[in-house]
Length: 276
Ligand SMILES: Nc1ncnc2c1ncn2[C@@H]1O[C@H](COP(=O)(O)OP(=O)(O)OP(=O)(O)O)[C@@H](O)[C@H]1O
Ligand SMILES: [Mg+2]
Image 1: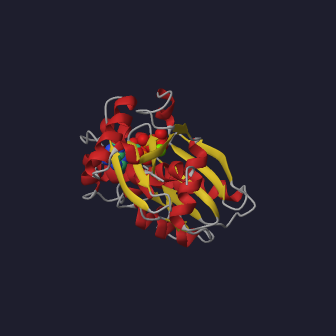
Image 2: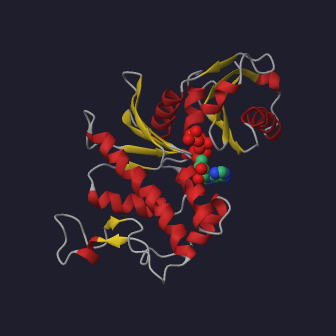
Image 3: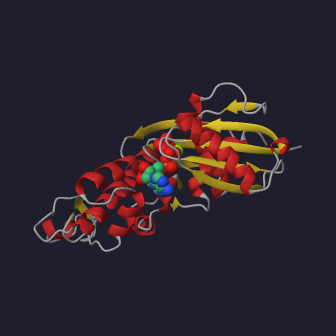
């Protein structure tokens, strides 16, 4: 039996992974190209070449993501299947985290919430949000000098939230119920003449992460497992600030946020798992 490839053609980036028939991971790769079809073929060629693999060694290809619809038929004569994205997100998130059931969040260009249950082989799209990585890059471009994601991250390293966000402590003498003084009352409500562009970069990252995490909590509350684990996947999991966001939400809510290794590749892995 040959290897199985999973390719996730997302709104911003294309991810490719190779799995052996016994489900061990061969390698992962992310590429970006101007258009999604070029991105897909570029990812495949680059992946095979980098790993010294012949095309004849590929048994099947599983494609998912918004850009998967640009391709019809097989790739280079290799049987090629399309996988529904939410099922790929759910399967990949569970596999990487080793959980049997969870809410899996895909933090990509936009954000999707999936209730995944391994035993029932059920991967239900609970809903989505337009607040995601695309929001971060777009607002970052307009509000700071950072032209792309990497530049925004570098800028944010020098930032502070002190002159960006309004905290509970700033508007209330006593903490509200279980909310501590440091909890955000309103993102960007404390902008003032001392705010720097580095502060704004950090404020944007913080606002996007807090919004995604809060929506994850609310998504879980509508399920039969309201306090259950929440698995984080997608390229936004690479943000440095994700660890501190996990920590602060851990103090506020009973749900455990899990950041598995290779979280960026969860959807591509989930697609490939459809073939093993
Ligand atoms: N190397 C990178 N190149 C581009 N964007 C990146 C990179 N690393 C992180 N990002 C951020 O991640 C976002 C894209 O995330 P991801 O790759 O998970 O999305 P996608 O799969 O392309 O999109 P979607 O799943 O919403 O269709 C970008 O909007 C950007 O904020
Ligand atoms: Mg994606």
